[in-house]
Amino acid sequence: MDAGRVKQRFGARLRKLRKAKGLTQESLALACDLDRSYVGAIERGESNVSLINIHRLAEGLKLKPGELFGD
Amino acid sequence: MDAGRVKQRFGARLRKLRKAKGLTQESLALACDLDRSYVGAIERGESNVSLINIHRLAEGLKLKPGELFGD
Image (cartoon, rainbow over all chains, first blue to last red; front, side, top):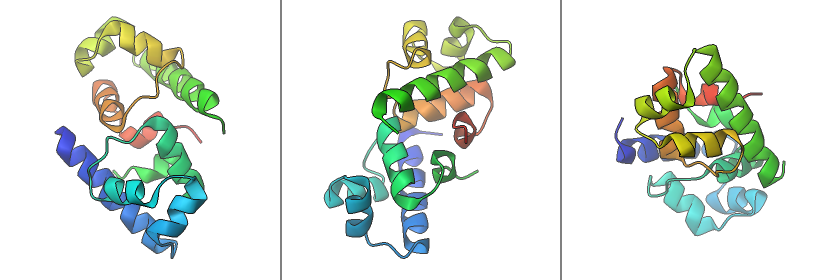
């Protein structure tokens, strides 16, 4: 899978999971101690997000990191 | 979980999965088009590996990206 598509798929899945938890970008960002604008960039597929931030997002969503990846 | 521990756990799991597939660091690196030394650094917990490289490692191991994360 090409790099752009990897980032877009991750971002789309993050957005879906965040909405399923009833969280805004701002509330997720606060829970993760990340900038709201950075959460937005990840969801738009603009960020090659790192392992540590994947863990922070998972913690903010109360999910396991592996759950942030689809099949 | 603190950042160092996140990287160490990911690295330890990668090493375990690689060995379970009977691959050397070099053969995995070739399959992923990553440097062998970089694969070694990830396994030692020294790299905050990115989303795109997580996907490349998963492809090299013929696993889904989420499988690179334990519980």
